[in-house]
Image (tube, rainbow, N blue to C red; front, side, top):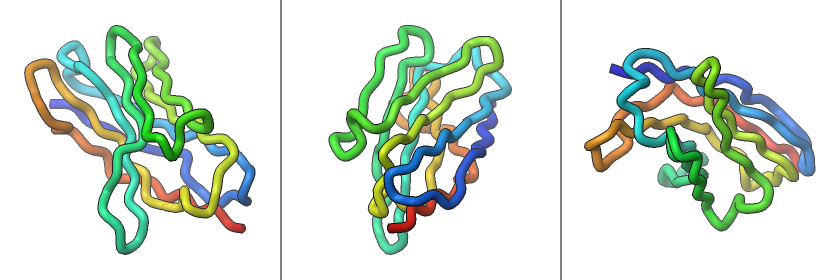
Length: 119
């Protein structure tokens, strides 16, 4: 099993920055990829960014490309989402998710962290 714990959310003004962290523990040797999703009030959860666990390949939603960066600290198994030039429409609960080798879905989820961007 894999456990994910997010942190780093908060309130920021439009144009500001935040860095979210996702601490990954458990059977990390079997991890294939990590991602961030978000869910705004009254909306469905949507994909934000993903990164291959080993090869470092990255993917971004068009709405955040060029503003957000997903990265991983190999030493302490933490995945980050650096968010710059934040907009009010980025306001949401952000979730970290993990996919194991052989899975075809994001099986592991964190509890979420709130990000609020004021105009």
